[in-house]
Length: 319
Image 1 (cartoon, rainbow, N blue to C red):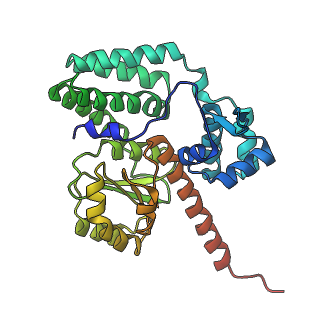
Image 2 (cartoon, rainbow, N blue to C red; image 1 turned 90 degrees about the vertical axis):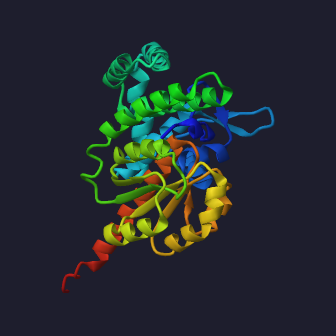
């Protein structure tokens, strides 16, 4: 269950950066048209201008959009969510960034030395200092991404990489204890057949569970016949499939298409979005934080559809 292939997925940098609206849309899962509407109506976005006159959006803009999406998923109107995102401080902005950076460095040092006690102690301190979402998106995902890159460069051994990823995976499973409880929308998570790496899927599962999804996790190397039988039994609102290997996606694109004809499917794979959408599935961004926002948006759409069906089913009062 190593993380060497996690380096193929994009992660959100903590350094100051700017981006065009298309990139902001990809990161947050919100369409460019809706982003422009939120900018115009609510002032949610505060872009600067490039020398060529293009709007450039910051990571602060991205954070406000993510907060608004989360609030909408929790039932707020767009106007209320935008107002709250603009006026309320990001809970993590108050986190002591030097402390977090120091803990990230300590985690790397401990796991490079095969020191599980020190590694768990660092993770305990991290989770006591910041939220689970912040710890995963801003510390653990970048750490695992870097670990995969260091393995590829030969600066860490296979043993170091396996030790670190398995320790982190164990902690993630601890955070996943209650993800099957609560929530009215079920997401079924699985890696494609032949895909042995599921730590990215596990990270995504923990994050979407904290956005209100119930999660059923099948993990690595899931045969499609097993997946289809489980879909029939559980009737999930969404099936999420992942692979880090474009050849595996190509091999099973037909099976994905068959599954997408029967239920809602979203796929995270290192291929262009058009290849995914051609199967009838939704394409998830390679950045796990952005994929979380997209899945949160799907839950909000599902909730609105369910509410609409409930309203239409109510008997009308007699005149």
